[in-house]
Image (cartoon, rainbow, N blue to C red; front, side):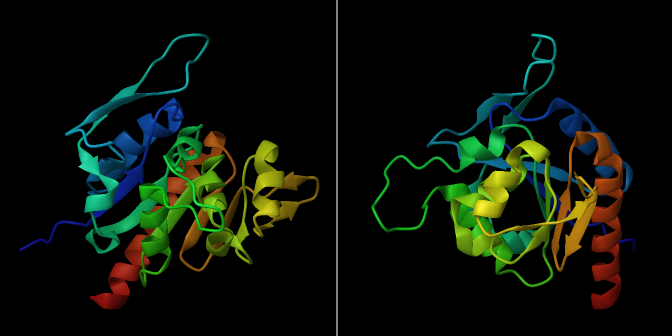
Length: 204
């Protein structure tokens, strides 16, 4: 009997990157992985999210049925944070208590992911913004990101890795895999799969 490969969860919200979305939906199933989109649904059974517009045209949309507060990181081989502005929206909390860490459902889920042994976490472009919601999630971690969010990442304690005057294309720090921008999404996805496969081989 051939055992099916585990799921890859992708955190998503409005204004996600359309090119990453298309490649995720193509590449991971080709490698035998089911892709499941996760978000905070605000009490709804489902919500529809749309991508950043390209030349004024919204090209992609996704209907999400899975509430992030109702799933466990152990259900996935990897959790990916899609680029664009989606992760900024996911760190929104309806009520903020002075001195209390961010309690947005996606941030709470990310804390659990970070604490889950062997779970691969992938970020690309702007998506480290979700980590910035709680400095303890990012402080001391080696990462890369788009140039326009370097200040956010470094102010949250992340150790941005450089190649001369550019941020590095890809950085692996333990279970955290970060990619610079959508232009290297194929390398990013290939690395995610390699890291998952290596982990599956260890536990087999």
